[in-house]
Image (cartoon, rainbow, N blue to C red):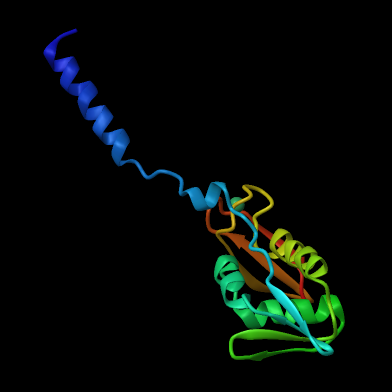
Length: 140
Ligand SMILES: [Zn+2]
């Protein structure tokens, strides 16, 4: 191999190293576990802020979704989501998975880099920033 070729390969190596790697977050995206406690007749989700950050949604949006799913009012107090009614952690985790699978994770590329746009007629548009997919989901 000539010296010139060798240099070229080294250059390729270096270029490859500089290429953006897929972030571990995109590949191993894990839906965060709900941390909840029941207090009297209410259920409190203590880590709604963390969940909302992971979903890149506002805690209010997730509160609204849970309110609809569970058919009870929700409110906020000191960054915690208060649900009117007693709900087991398993049940809340199941609902949260539904939320992420429907409204956060792109069904085409399975990445969570998405946002929602208003779609009109009781619909939302899920827009994927990773692969460009765009499709309608039911409003909540
Ligand atoms: Zn996508």
